[in-house]
Length: 400
Image 1 (cartoon, rainbow, N blue to C red):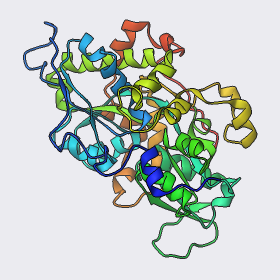
Image 2 (image 1 turned 90 degrees about the vertical axis):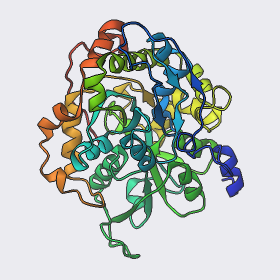
Image 3 (image 1 turned 90 degrees about the horizontal axis):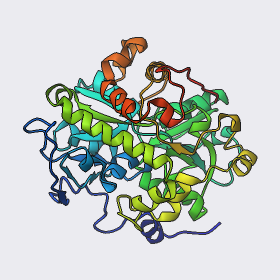
């Protein structure tokens, strides 16, 4: 296995002095694209749309809608999307009104709405699957993680939920204490910025990490880790990041909100048929929305070889016929309900009392506003355009 210096890691991941991960919005920069608004938008609706994102492929629809002019086609004025380094940063900017639309982890949206009282609404899924558990090459089974440390990107993340389900299935549990010594069968979980994970894995600080792409693909390309399990092979077509808006924007500017969602749905539909071009546009070889090189992003979007990953155990359900990452905009109610139930049994640090009082069956109606995405889907041929059955319901398939 190749030894990488910190300098090489930073260069590969597009980081360094004056890192691109500093929020250009908070620094007061970013190029503005002035565009003509459609008459259908009301006065004030044409103020520049400000989008916040993290440098992960989860953000792709928000970024491709900008790169391909889908926002402009809907009569919107839009600024270059603003890049943030971490989830806390992007949530704080959203709450402060510095950005209008962001992608955020679905469990984080639950925490924002019900735990923090933020009037946030999920208006669409941004993507499905697109994450994996990546480990040291010497680890071959989940049980090998006993007594070791695994990094997660955020407590309120699908990554934490899926990881803990995998641990439970294999007789392990997260350590709910800060002591240095772990009891038998315990695994220490630490929150870590995705950009720091490959280096931490390479230098032995952690035994593995579960996170969004392209950081799993980056570990493969750099030959510092291997994928133990894809999250989409544990929970079929699960949502990871979702698109959120403020509730008052949906109420005061419905035409504007619907225009944003239409642009995102059209972007997702285009992306599913143009994966290599999506990788190029996102990478430093194209528009440079993501600081990672083309090789890692392209692997994320195009490489899900059943023969290779079936042999390693990373894919155990080839019959599901899914992708490494896919793009489905409709937020199924069954997923929200199942996610809340899982969250209620998942260890997270901090005050989590709100989860105990949350009704899983009622959570979707309070958190999600699916009117705009239903309209947008109707304009492109419905769910069938995404290869899905026409029903607005589904049964969740979970097999850790």
